[in-house]
Length: 78
Image 1 (tube, rainbow, N blue to C red):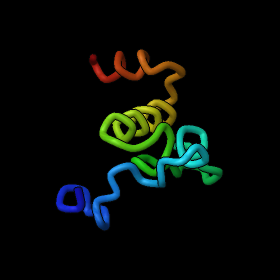
Image 2: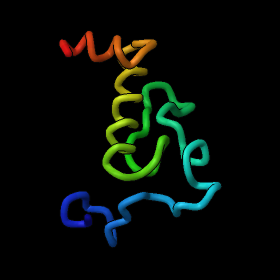
Image 3: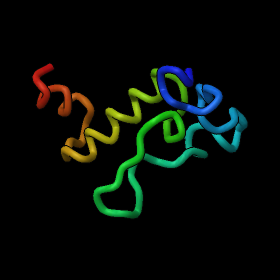
């Protein structure tokens, strides 16, 4: 994973997979700083390819002001 993601030692899932570090235990994509959003396997919903893509979609939806994910896809022509 380090080769493709530049993630030291290939930390595929970000934080340890313990009950306190999964799901809501991870940082949300929205932060207290206006205009700053976090995405990736360190954030909600979690690690792995699906989690990373989902966090990116959530951030894009919030940044572009769509209440629902389906509205985001419609706006993108999908």
